[in-house]
Length: 312
Length: 315
Figure 1 (tube, rainbow over the protein chains, first blue to last red):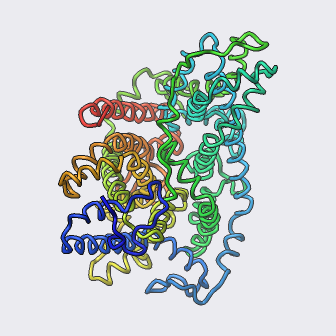
Figure 2 (cartoon, rainbow over the protein chains, first blue to last red; figure 1 turned 180 degrees about the horizontal axis):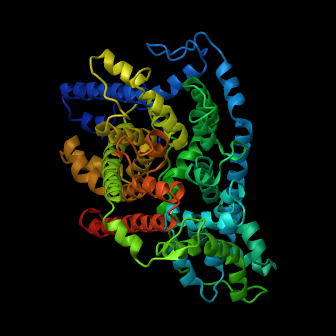
């Protein structure tokens, strides 16, 4: 199975993947293949590339249209045929967003809820996961099974009693109604416990001989080694909390208490709602930072989703 | 190629019991154990287990938040049986979930196979990013955007369809098109997730095996159906379970774009729950609906696990 340079068209099979010795199918067949078959493969690849390119362009077309439209002066926006270049250019729509909804305040609300939820739930999950992984205690296994069973309970089922509870506590229309229940994340407990189980116990034995207690073993030995698991959970937790719509819709009502997704929807509807082009500017303001963060941290994002695999 | 790592799920799941247990240091270990789990356990009792039990109890009452709750036994469940709107909602939700599972599994697998090898590096990066990125945007933003993209007068899709001679339907106003439109938007929003799961799954198919098949004279189609596909069945199974669970709880785009209309053609189970519980404040009845949603999800998931023995490799 020799791959001759002739079969690898320039630019077609870039090296640098997990397997660099992988010009793959074409070369494997290449040794025995007739020239006609090789040409057919090459045409096949070209067709595939074109189809994928078109598909990719179609996927991002709505986003590109949204961004260019939001950068166009209000009178010229939404003229047909659709504009793909923002002419005449204007930032008026963004100014209108800021006038219509307290979007800065809402971004801050989203940040507060998300940071408290993610940090808090990872903290409680770390403690619990440590106990489930490292401390043999009476009642451990039944409780762990009970927690696992709770993974199947959907939010819609628990949110009605939680709503009643928050109403009695006077926490309706406060951010606390969102982040207090989010301080426990059963999936994170399970995932971290599995990860802790892969860390050799010899490490904590050694620390214990040096006089370390449970807390020090957890915070100075296990957690630093659980970086990939923590960052995967943090990324997914951030994504879920930042994009949450159902919870805020039920608990929040005043504009200055809303988080971004709910604020966006309120921008488009009801009294004081803005025209479409202002809504586009609002969405752009919310989406662009995500795009930038994503392009910078693409690798960790993608690995987190692939490794944890829960749907947002 | 560089963006995807092989799945870590397998390597993390090791030895649940733990062979040797460490000896306690200082505190007796039962006390230490309970202390460590207490914050999570308390929150779990108050915000998951408690509400779960409370929802079951509430389903036996008539309660509107203002007047005292009245015990009505199984009346809510009896009413559910004859509730045509609930039937409609469950029907729509099943159609949506089924379409979602099929389109995501097929689309995700085809995309992953196409991108997995033999593609220009820059093009591969572009396609991966373009397919995955919408998944990171909140449903709220996605729903608002698509409401305008599918707008009959100035929307992108309608305009270009008219240009190539197709008369576009009223996407969200025609009862026959509203649910398919939501299915399409959901595909755009979440296909990146399935695509990623499939790509990760493909990394577990050893290239030696497909190459060996080719050396033995199998063509591309044969090597796909007899080597790659069987080895991908665990990934397909996982994706179908997860996609169904997520799809059956579909709510955000429906609430934002159509509110369940026109003519209840897009009302879904959770949409109906929201209307009943948080707009009509029929708390007991809404709890009963929530229990039905929970039961359906559990039942279908169990069925999928049961059926998986027949088609999943190494199940």
